[in-house]
Figure 1 (cartoon, helix red, strand yellow):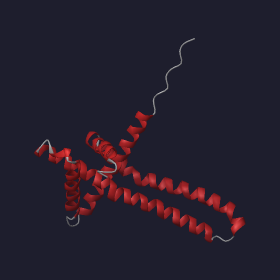
Figure 2 (cartoon, one colour):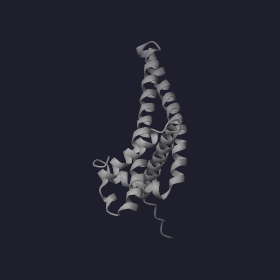
Figure 3 (cartoon, rainbow, N blue to C red):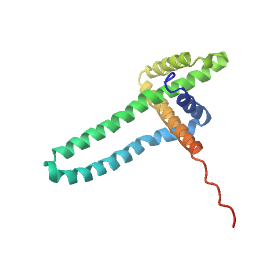
Figure 4 (tube, rainbow, N blue to C red):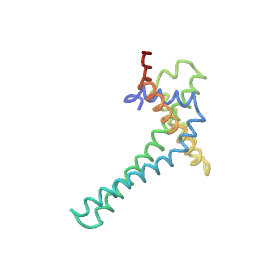
Length: 166
């Protein structure tokens, strides 16, 4: 992420620092968004499968399509939540901590990411509550990604200019 998507990582980290509680809120709403996407996708697949069923045949096709799409979407969400979002949170925590120690350290993004990964890893090793803390950290990161994407979309789409008065 540090090498391939540095601007995206910086935007997400800045969104988490600027708006931590809205980030947590959006992250906590993300499982419901996944559910809505899954239901909408399943409805579309059922409609397509019913149309194709007359051509291909049994309901096995419908079952295969539903299972593979639902599984793929869920897997993508879990990977985004527990790996990418946790990396964003770890990177942000590390950047905040290292900037207090030495102002030059956060400029070295690779080291900031390594320290952030170690922070998240160490926190999730705490017995019993480590998993819960890891989930909360991931939700912070997931919400920060959403906040960063929304603000980027808003900047990318200029507002329409009013028409001149006649």
